[in-house]
Length: 288
Image (cartoon, rainbow, N blue to C red; front, side, top):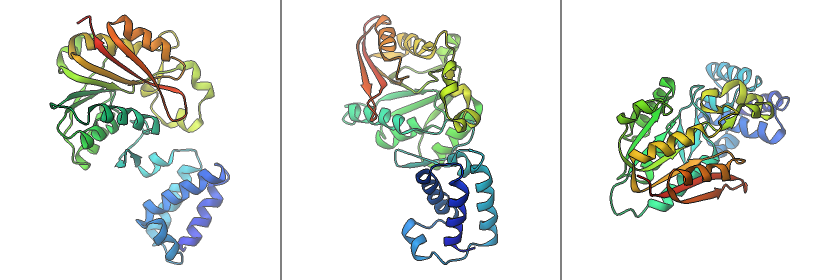
């Protein structure tokens, strides 16, 4: 099988499951991962033969992809903030919206006069703290997650990408454990925020493969993680510190009100590139 034939094979298979554009993007990604050749090199070497091992791997990838398994889990890789992260089903696939959260922190603190102390709550793959460390190298960064599997992935990524992150396994909803956490200048989080009732409108590949622990909250209390973060800030966030969090697009005003109730004098709702309420920034803690 040549590279040209491999591309034709994969496109034909995936076009039955995905729209043409997405099938083409997945095909390019798979062939680049499979061959380690850039798109230009694959065009130039279109008649190059795949090895028997590569053909078997290609067929395996295809069998997974046509079952709607996300390509990031199939290839065990996802790009975030210009870095390649290892991912598996223990962690969420990093999203572009979360890159915007990282960018916001970098923009606010790139000229910080002193070394920052940052903690990421619900770190998953570690994409947030690792990306921040690459851009704010003087910062001391901590990251916690309740999932041992997620922390194993995050630890691998920190090692592979040459970043020193201090990982902590902890359930942030258990306030009795908060004394184990450090005092910090920044709390950042992309916590679970999707009400369980939203599952009916979500894509199959998300529901069947991504970890529900990192996605969903009860319909009765969708702000439970934000409340925990606001309470944690009372004892662990410097008075001059800031909370940055990704939020549900429909819960922006409610999330802002919650942080105001916990003594944050300034709360800001920030939209993503799609024009949706996606981030909150809270500072000016007065009640500590």
